[in-house]
Length: 489
Image 1 (cartoon, rainbow, N blue to C red):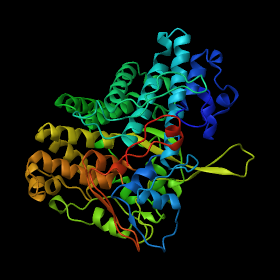
Image 2 (cartoon, rainbow, N blue to C red):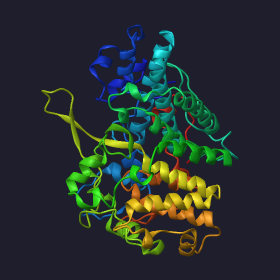
Image 3 (cartoon, rainbow, N blue to C red):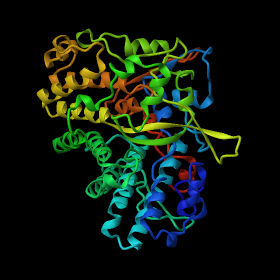
Image 4 (cartoon, rainbow, N blue to C red):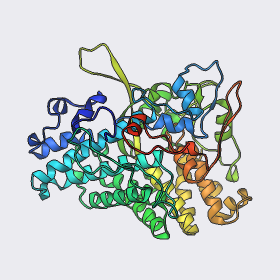
């Protein structure tokens, strides 16, 4: 059974995405030519999913609202995602099928690299390439299982259907696959993550943030253990790995919302947000998706009602936050993305839309550490980190005025039953603002069972409750046709 329609040999899937380099275009599945560290390194350029989850996840989340029929841009896929209708086509960038294909394409490249490393003796000089391949393979599987399967639940993970975990080169036409359980997938991810983390060498890269470097791997591990959350040990590991991200002053490692981003022009902010020199960015990838062009203008996105709900509602101590929103009622946005026009070749007049996407950041690592510490009842540690964060996100920050205590948070979230529950709610509310347009909110909606209500002009609201099966993206039709069990509907 083929995981996606166009894969016959490991590297032929590369042609589904036009970002493949000439090296791969000339050497489909020619493992005998992967006989040097340099050639393996070139292969690993494509071990990261080039398709995007951002538009898909953002539009499904409670960050998206209805701008009305006068919106600047309308697309059918945007409405289908907003109303949780299934979109079966890998040709639509931003669709579930496209992201599925993109991830398994990336996994195929990682497996090809690991196979070549083994054939070349698996020596110490190849350790850093092995680390990158293992971590990249783990990352793509992790994203897939958190979109196409249920969130990890220690009571049911051993029986919940996950996704196929592919660890071998696909070099036969009709290889059979099955859906591993969620627990099996997480166990495989943990094995790859652990092995890869111990082999990283940051000195190999000219631009480390385009690869799995040590800080990015630690941030990934912090996310992995928080989202698995099968025990206090997982939460403690999340805290420990998040702490490895920060080598000095925590606040200085975070995005400077009340500094640089409060004084620069709209276009300067867009340019800066996804640069490799921007300190909070730990792992960046070029993403083939027009979201970087239309995220501010498309009909079902940050509507004026959602802007008011997310950014203008009251919060702890009445903090005035520095997430500067630009635009009007039809284009409210926080500047984060620039459209890149990528040509197939220098003489081509056609191009595909792309943007740089921040896959992992210091900011997220801190949010994860706060949430994990709160769940562990490490209230003092969580509050310390919250105040590190506030130093960078509160306008005209003054510690004498803006320092927040556990009592402040509990008082504001008076409908909660404990300090830790109040702190988690606070963190999720700030995180929602912090990662607007980036799709991260969808994963918190899933993990915490948050109900989503989407208004649609002239139609009944669409309500997605915690137990709604549409929270799991449907397995692509081609994969179902070839034997994979679909998600229940």
